[in-house]
Length: 380
Ligand SMILES: Cc1ncc(COP(=O)(O)O)c(C=O)c1O
Image 1: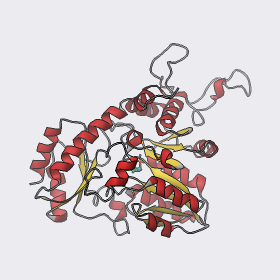
Image 2: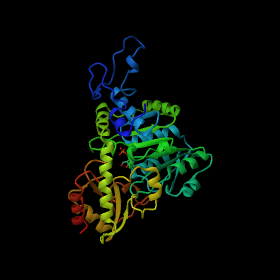
Image 3: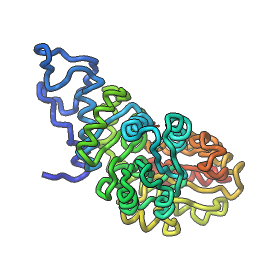
Image 4: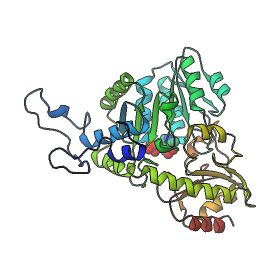
C-alpha cells in the first residue's frame, strides 16, 4: 500500500520496536552486538559501522521519502559526497559541476578530488546546452547538479539533464538539499542519485550535522552501501535519531517555510534598498517555469542583491536581529548571511565566486510579520 509523504515521514522504517513496543525507534548506542554463534549475528548486526538499527530506520525513511530503493546516511553532506565520488569515479574520469555550487562541494572537487586525478568542469546548470557542452564524451562519469543552487538559486531542469547525462553514459546526481524531498523528488524525474546535507531542512532544527544518499538503482545502492562501510563516514545513532525526529515534521515545516518566503520575497521585490530579488517563486526568476514543473512549491531560501553594494550587504547582515547572522540553512529559525565572506569564501578568486552585494536568507517558520519588521530595520 502506498502512503502519502507525511505518513511516510512519520512511519517509514519506524514500526514500533519489537521487544517493548516503543513507538519511537530507540537510540541503539552500541558499537557491537552479541552473536549467538560464530558467524551467526542476530539479524545481520555485527558492528555499528556496518549496521545500526537507528541508522537503518533513518535510511529506510529517507529512501521512502525520495522514492528510491536504497538510502544511506552519513556523518555530513560532504561525507556523503566524498563517498559517492570515490565509489563512482577513478583517476582520469571527469565530472560536470554547477558553476555556483555550494562552496564546500566546489572545494571537494577543486582541492581534494582533483589531486587524485578527477577532472571537473563548472557549467551553468540552468542552461541545458551549457551542461551538454561541458561533457567530455567517454570521460564524464557524473553530471552533478544542485537545484535550486546555493546561493544563486539557479534552477536545473532535472528531466532534461537526466537525458543529457544518460545520452553521454553518465549518471545524474542531484543535490536536493535546498528543496528537500517534500518539495522535489529528483528520482521521479530521472536522477540516479540524490544527495542531501540532512543538516538542513531534513533535520530542520539546526542541532545535528548529517548527510544522505538515495539511489535509484538497487545494485548501485548496494555498491554504495559497501563503500559506506568500507570508508566509514557513517553518522552515529544519536545523530541518526535526531535527524529522524526532525523528518517527522518536514512537510508541515516546509509549507510554513514556503508561506513565509513567498511573503518576504514579495516584500523585497521592488524595495528601494534592494537591487534584485532571487527567488524561484517570483515569475521574474528565469527558472520559475521549470521550478513550477518539478517542485511542489518554491522553498524557503531567498537571495537578494543590496542596492548599496557590498558594504550595504554586509551592513544588512550585521543589523539584522531576529534573522540570526550564521552559516547553514533550513532550520526553524531564520538566518541571514553574506555568502561572499561566509559560506562561499572558499570560492573566492575561482569561477564560482559569488557577487559581493549578495545577501542570503534562510527564512524560518517564525511569525512572518516579525521577520518583515526585522528586514525593514536592517535594510536601513
Ligand atoms: C547544497 C549543499 N550541499 C551540501 C552541503 C554540505 O553539507 P554538510 O555541511 O552537511 O557537510 C551543504 C552545506 O551547506 C549545502 O548547502
